[in-house]
Image 1 (tube, rainbow, N blue to C red):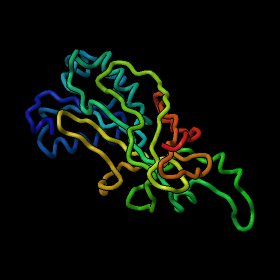
Image 2 (cartoon, helix red, strand yellow; image 1 turned 135 degrees about the vertical axis):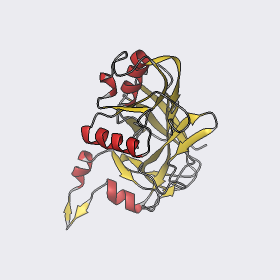
Image 3 (tube, rainbow, N blue to C red; image 1 turned 180 degrees about the horizontal axis):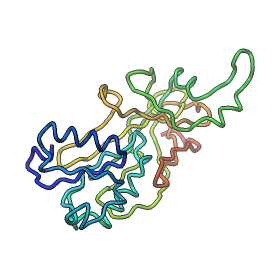
Image 4 (cartoon, rainbow, N blue to C red; image 1 turned 90 degrees about the vertical axis):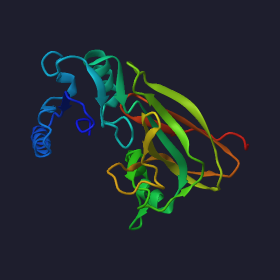
Length: 248
């Protein structure tokens, strides 16, 4: 698309050899080999003056994972800012946000927690279960217990990022047993252009939503304020329940 829009010097970076070779065939079949060059390297191994003629004017990257950070987006973007981009370069996407809501669901509770199996109490195994489980909004029945709220926002135009953790208060709007937070992503691509895999509207792409489970279902009531501790360690999100505060 960049070539079709008129860009003349495009370097595509792909570290998996078989994918890089397939990308070259796609470029040739669409007659853009004069404008696009594929480099079979990780971006951290690119060298300005060799792989790139000079620092780039635009960075376009799609390494945002379903849970926002798992594909080392922060380290990769920091390296690009330091070595590969000119000052003031255009970054696409320029920001990424993890969004979520409290949810109740019998199906998700069975997915996240184990109790009795064939007459045996195996509930201690729940403590060993993953705290992040992939879900798809149109495939699993669940009910919102809160409005949507922002969890973590990342400014991808910034050159450095630190781990962060903060307390977040959520207004509960429905009674129910909260099994966790269903989380999705929102990307700010450019002025007036955004993307989201919101579970109500996103049906045909590769991103899933993620259930961040609690250690057990937590009973909540409409009008309560439910406290969460949210943040990231640069490579993964952390969403932990705290004690709910007094009713609003």
